[in-house]
Length: 192
View 1 (cartoon, rainbow, N blue to C red):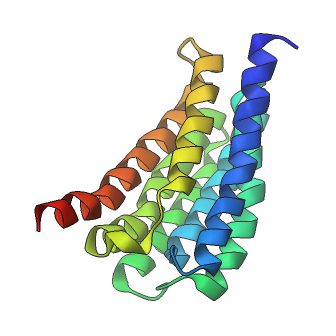
View 2: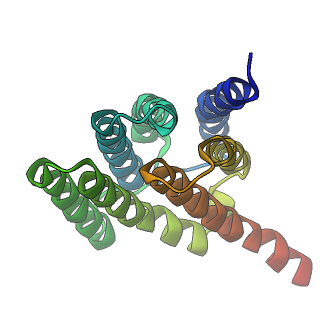
């Protein structure tokens, strides 16, 4: 097995393990995902997968495919263990995600579709970011650690700048932002 194949395999394995860790955290009451975020992340991951596939990606498409598959599972888990879904922010995020889907359909260009998907995904994360900012203890860090590591391995494999980097870099930055918000609680507990 080549180094590239080993890194892709490890990246995919971590991306498959992370939702199991997150589901356990949900069942234990340690993580309460924002339902609208889970829906929009599922939608954006699915769009990203099909965009990368249409563009002929051979590396990032695997991670995007795994993300689309496992986000289906996380969406279903969030219906029982999640919070929210009907706030004004949730509704705006939903509208923007649908606009991303429409943009993908109208664009006819994999790059434009991917950019719509990334924008929808980030806006979809807004409910989770706000929730985690207000209640850092509503999320456990392990899901985001595993996600970040999986994506970082994918970025290393891709190496040179290409469309393949857009989705993984976006996911990495979003996960690092979530980790920062989660660890605000540790910093504030130490300071009190």
